[in-house]
Picture 1 (cartoon, rainbow, N blue to C red):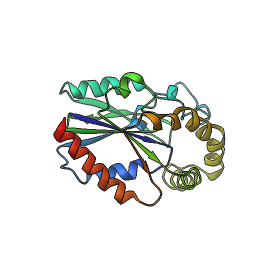
Picture 2 (picture 1 turned 60 degrees about the horizontal axis):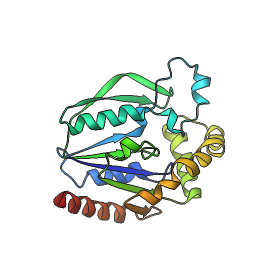
Picture 3 (picture 1 turned 135 degrees about the vertical axis):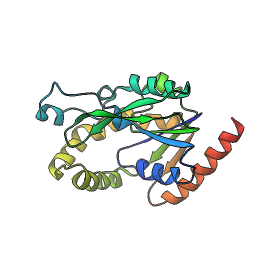
Length: 204
């Protein structure tokens, strides 16, 4: 099993790149696990309290469970991955069964913030994008796909996204195996990543 961690700032293009990347491999050989599935349960909070949480701090995530799930997959057992809803800021009751695959991609902004989880990655990728571009993408995504209004998106960017990025995301560039600058070259990045993964698998 070859496990790849792909991180980078919010709206840096990670999810789009991962979707294109997986299309270059046999679907029976590859699967994707999103950090977003591992946001902690918030049933004890009101909707207002959920909205005001700092979702860009590692404490908002159950990274221990994500680590355990990766270890379970490595031992050739399936997992029941949580399902998270951005509309209600909480996990749903159901789960998604994930079976062991030859290649597993783990994608998310904070996945390098847990040492034992970080050690499971055979390849660590950082996707960089200009801060202004990421903000524009974030506004477009959250207002169109996650039922947010622009006031909430910009407020969250100023108060949590930007400062948390500087503390918990940007420093991990230095420990990444590869850094890709994603402005408008997604297809080139996908091609290069595909070649890197294929080469690393052959030599592992």
